[in-house]
Length: 398
Ligand SMILES: Cc1cc2nc3c(=O)[nH]c(=O)nc-3n(C[C@H](O)[C@H](O)[C@H](O)COP(=O)(O)OP(=O)(O)OC[C@H]3O[C@@H](n4cnc5c(N)ncnc54)[C@H](O)[C@@H]3O)c2cc1C
Image (cartoon, rainbow, N blue to C red; front, side, top):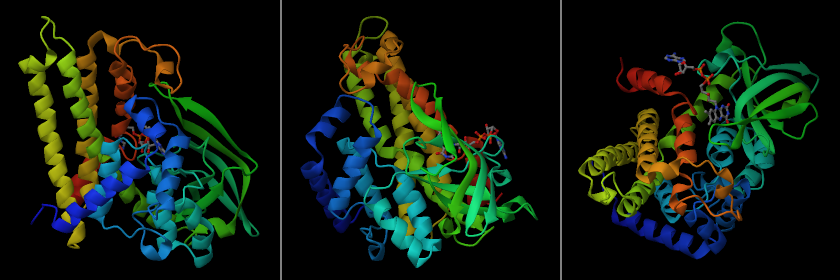
């Protein structure tokens, strides 16, 4: 197995780096460098710039207007974006619902939804989890009852990211209570402006409003908006979850954070007044995490190699499990590096345009919110215990 990038891939990396350098607006670059919080508009703006250059949906085949990148090219493009500090592009449209519509939708559905998903026009959210259905998703209760050429939807979704800002939701709904729970689920694409949809914000421990509780009261959804067959939604949902897990490894973001911690450790002092960077215990901690990160990078290259050679395994769960462990460990180390300056809780300082100076050095202002945010890594997209179950069964064959 040769894990090295070949000449063509190295040339591709140079091309993507040049594209980003030329096209990332200064204002977004400055915002990223200053450590301000990204907003929906930032990611949308960058998505539309990429789309204008044929890169709005790098993972889609060319026949659907995508760039037709291989898994390796996609990884390289994303790594370059993260290293250059580009705002993240929402994965819901391009990486999650898009491929499902492409694989299981009709020609009319592809025509209706794919162009605006690819071009960053429609903003999507995911409506899977419910109060009693997270890991055990198949027990979901949101009901969709057929009424002529519509479904009438009643129920509730929870932990829904960005539903308050989204134009569309891809939702799992129960269309039958017969047989096994998995056999009565369908996928509906729901226009978030439809009468009967309301949301209640869930403010997370890091002070953000990303999550929502979404209620459906007699929401009428055209039957046209059902993807694939009625009651076969579980198959489509699983297809989508596989794509979701591979997204959460955050290798490039962790590489950047490790570099940042090293920079900070040259400026901060340890308990005896020496540079933190000269403290052997601190250096050891950082080195241990970086060794794990290097192993993750190699695992990722192995997963990419398997994809290239058509022997794809179940690497997504391994990448997610190790990737989240590393990003959490780094966010913890950043708190140690900035000492007391990690404790002031001035969330306004994270907003671009904030006019109060941060308490302490500016690199410290995001440390605690990041630490808090990363706690969710081992829950979102499938909990750590569920990833371990997947690895045990599907990778190790136990
Ligand atoms: C930041 C964030 C964003 C999210 N965004 C979305 C979104 O946009 N859309 C959406 O639909 N959902 C979203 N979720 C929800 C997420 O998918 C669920 O939280 C997750 O699947 C876990 O479900 P649960 O919260 O119901 O926990 P539960 O499933 O109730 O789990 C509780 C505990 O029990 C453990 N457990 C459960 N089953 C097993 C088992 N079989 N073996 C061993 N241990 C087990 C779990 O690991 C966990 O520790 C988001 C969650 C977070 C934190």
